Amino acid sequence: MGRQVKLRIWRGNKENGDFQNVNVEANEGEVVLDVIHRVQATQMPDLAVRWNCKAGKCGSCSMEINGKPRLACMTRMNTFEEDETITVTPLRAFPVIRDLVTDVSFNYKKALEIPAYSPPANLGPGEARMEQIDVERSQEFRKCIECFLCQDTCHVIRDHEENKKSFAGPRFFIRIAELDMHPLDTLRNRKRTAQEEHGLGMCNITKCCTEVCPEHIRITDNAIIPMKERVVDQKYDPIRWLGSKISKREGIS
Amino acid sequence: MAGVRAEGRASIKERTLRVDRWWLQPAITVFVLVSFIIYATFRAFENGYYFVESSHLVSPFYSPCLSASCEPGAQLFGVVAPQSILGFGLSPALLILIFPLGFRLTCYYYRKSYYRSFWMSPPACAVAEPHKKYTGETRAPLILQNGHRWFFLAGLVFNVILTYDALISFKHEDGSFGMSVGTIVLLTNATLLWLYSLSCHTCRHIMGGRLRHFSKHPVRYKGWTIVSKLNHYHPVFAWISLFGVALTDVYVRFVATGAISNYYFF
Image (cartoon, rainbow over the protein chains, first blue to last red):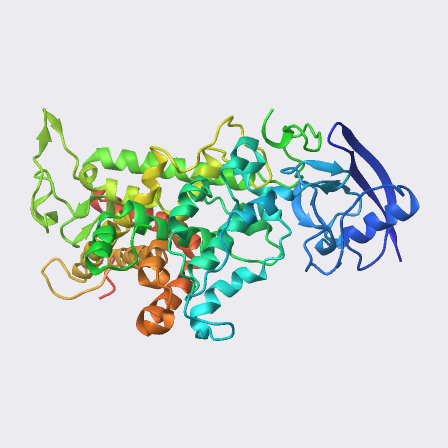
């Protein structure tokens, strides 16, 4: 048996826009994306919304629901009060294209700036061998579905557009951490570039990225803070620095 | 205007559309931390009621007691500072509090807490911050946060000293073996401080986080695994150890002033 719910949906484009109120039916077991599709089917046929898998694995239906960055397909309608007006907006850290669809190309540009995995030169295809305990730490980061909710909620770029030039964001810090922790990656300057080119030092570890991650990746504890500590090893710890010079272990670069 | 109202973004005037009580957590954090700071400042300058000779109890705010003004029984590690400087009495607490204070100030968890609650950067997730510019921890003074490991190491020294304080409180006034409420209080405080220190992100890194090949360092991997489990509860240990220090001091002060007596179990 369905019930009527009140939705307040932001509609517009990059020039202007505003909220529009609609009443729509919601059935048992439905999620916000289902209800938005019903609005689209019955009242707003031109409502723009990006979606794909409806299973929380493609990362397409990222939007802000009651002000929180969420996946619409993973936000159940029964988590709202009966008489609550549910506010739905596009991601507020990125330029809007139309209605609930934003331009997330910022993230693809940042992805291109991070050098890919660099295997040892003497290893041919299929010859790499690693022990499970050496790779399992970074396997957590491979769960990322690139929904960019962490990028959206990160105040470094959400509240400061000017920082987008110099800050890669949490999604790409877990990529850098994954590669820096990789037992066979040969690129030795990832820590330095993380700090100096990708803006790791701008992160003030307020953990919003972790809070919104639909894959429950512990972005701050397992990627950003370990990377910050690795940067300290190289840049801010004279004893470690001296040790690296004497024992010829991993150096500054 | 920059931020959520930057050009090209959805034109929404509200700083946040959150409808939950997002302000509650930062408000509680401010209340608790300000209360602790006020109490700790009062006690640091009070320069008294920190030692109970008969029960061998010393307040964590004053241990190690390194000033010439320390009560003789509390000078377990010698004297390194005079009784006064330029005519002003030097409280022994002022000599040492920079170390535990620095450890907590640079702690990754506390940074999250006070950046959110005091500096509102941001006050909560998806709530716009009020600042026009933001450079994070890339410049002075916040770049000094990178010195957390030095305070962590200093904190370990303090933990050893406070554990020693707890162990020597297993005594009656005549030196015979005994255990009092004060003993349990000091022991609990030391345990909480150890848990807070050992669950620290820097400890996790030193233990094995910096390695790329766990398989080549099985002992460090085991240590890293244990610290990682503790690390999950680091925020809990951060808060209860803070309360632990304050309540331990309150207890020692009450006993030292004679407001209560230190009950001995045996």
